[in-house]
Length: 264
Ligand SMILES: O=C(O)CCC(=O)C(=O)O
Image (cartoon, rainbow, N blue to C red; front, side, top):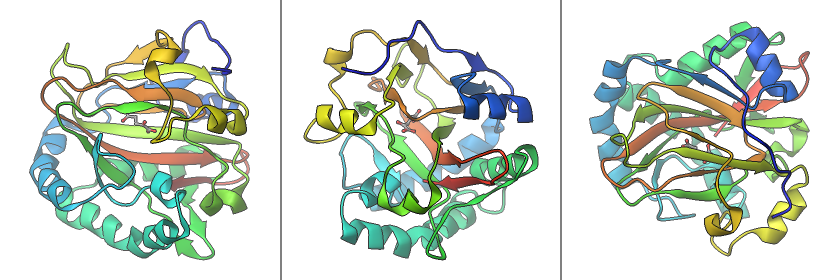
C-alpha cells in the first residue's frame, strides 16, 4: 500500500471553531466528541430504523444496511446518480419525520452547529440546483463490517466544488457491547486518489490483511460524534454481537471563506 505511514492520530475532543479549522487544515486528524447526542434519543430512534432498514436495499455491499442511496453508490453509475438525486428529499423526510419524529436528529443539529462555528457557515451540498442527500443511516448487524477504504473527493456529483478535504462524520446511535467489535480502525493517508483506485478490491475498499495493524482504533460510545479526514484509510471492525447504527454524512471543505457543504 502506498499511503503515508503515521505514528498515531491526533484528535481533539471538542467541536469548536478552532478544532474544526485544525481538522480542515490537517493539524488534527479527528474530532471525537463524547455524548454529542443524548443516549435516550438514540435509543428511541432504533425501532423505526430497524423497520426502515428491513425495507431498504443497499446495492454496493451486503456488509451493512443503509437508509438512503449514498454518494458511494451514486459514483458507481449514471443510473445510481439519478436515483441518488431523485430520492434525496424523500430520504431526508423519512429520517426527519418518521425516525426522529419531531425530535432534532443528530445530523440536523450538527448542521446548525457547523453553520454557527465555521467562519462562512455550513449548508447542504447541491448539484445543478438539486439538493444532495444531507445524511444517511447505516446499520451493521452481527457479522457486519466495512473494508478499509477512503472516501474520494474526485466524484462526479462533487466536481463543481473542488473540495480540499472530505470529512467523514458519524454519530453513533447504537454500538456493540465492549469487546464485540464495531471499532473504526485507521491506517495511513492517500494523497493521490488514483493510487488508491489502483489497489482497490473488486467489490470495494482494500484488503485488511495487507494493511497490517491500524495506527489508531476508536471505539465510540452511544451518542458520540466522530469526524475525520476521509482521505485516511478507515474501516469498520467486524461486529461480533449486537448491532451498530450510525447517522452519517460528509462535510466538504473548500476554504475558510466558503461555506462547508454537507452530503452523504
Ligand atoms: O461508521 C463508521 O464509523 C465509519 C463509516 C465509514 O466508513 C465512513 O464514514 O466512510
